[in-house]
Length: 229
Image (cartoon, rainbow, N blue to C red; front, side, top):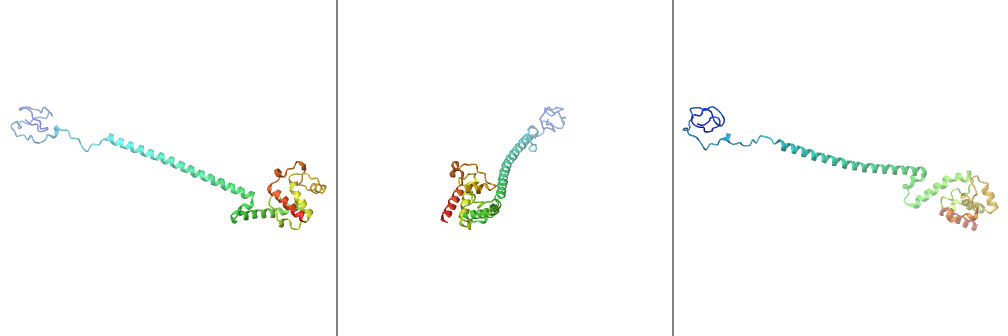
């Protein structure tokens, strides 16, 4: 007998299917034709394609999250380094700007530098600036040439000076450094100046170590003009 539920072949007279336990129909018998070529789908366990492999899905999700996390960390590190470089550049720019501001405050001629196309033109400008702003010092400080230690002198700087004034102007450079003088007229002249303090004996004064190149050249220039008069 064939079970109507599972198509299992049971012995004739069986009341219940020995495989699935379903009641047998007496109308079925072994003599009935059986299509043995028809597959018994209940005897095989075909995989259900609609079922989801959750373990595989979870692995894929975890792998995706790990990749995203790595990308985010690398991105933050890159952006952090980039921001650090930008901050460093900003600090350098600010420092440079502050330095320029300080230069401008200590040297008013600094702002005019870009208006000149050569170093000589800039030097001429700064020298003229020094001369113009030192003219009042000549009178109030009792100087012949108050800027003779700062710029190279020209004939225009000594125009109208007498031979005696040229001598005072030349020794004025020494006097600024506290050099004493052997000549009585020079001692009397510089002792009358409020800014003069003679503390170095003439024998102890070394021109090469105590004077600048500008001062040495100006002394030579004034001496040559003085001797030519």
